Image (tube, rainbow, N blue to C red):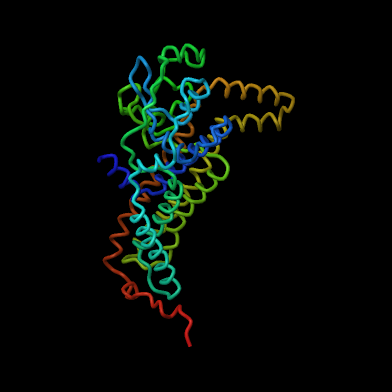
Length: 376
């Protein structure tokens, strides 16, 4: 219950963060589809990917504690012939989901009405309140989050158990050097270490305790950070910028005091500016992790060494060494942005309610929908 309340609060106070996590889960599930299809498992779908990465499959080794496995874990076990392909259809997965189609339809109608209401009020030059504007911004993120999670089962309680004849010691021994290091999350960390995530990467960096304490971990967290590329990264970037930009639409709104107007403008600019700065810092750090800055440097200043640099990068990737995250410059570049962003977002939430004490008279008028209907 506490986890649900946390995510509900986050969806209201920071819907762009929920969208970020949702896009990360979508990207991981989509990558799993490509991985399985390339290995000949054409029956694997996006729904299977979501189900696996939320802990839907529980591995039961012969001699150790059962633990959940991701789609990448499952794929490796299949390729290595430790497991047969789990004969689970999309209908069986969806049967475990608690999604309510009627509730979704009602929500869509409510969202559609809010959008039409704001458009109608703007067209008839009626006042739009800061609460309506903020609700519109949340709606934009909520729609995109729902699209990312369209194939994700909801609130699955019972995983599908996968007994395995081999012991964990046998699996690690046969895997060789890549499995020699002690694991941190599950014995299959050498395949997928469940990173990057807030709990497993950022919290240890900040010397904060990480739960759950049991190892292997009994469940996956919901805070895995997106590792996106191509169209997914572009969609997330423009979505978060759109969310921040909607608040700028209240630039010339009427506020109870001049101070509140100035604070709204400043907070909205911080929201948008910090989002732009975040994407610049994060993209630069991501380029560093994959070696793009190094390749660019040698391409410009020492092209003869470019082949050696590329070979070194491929060896690093083949070794499956986990990428360091966050980098120190990355963390300390984002930290002040996060603090000022939180302060600006906090003020905007407070002002949503403070602004209701003194509204323009037209804020109380309803949209005259009949004026939009052509008639003789």
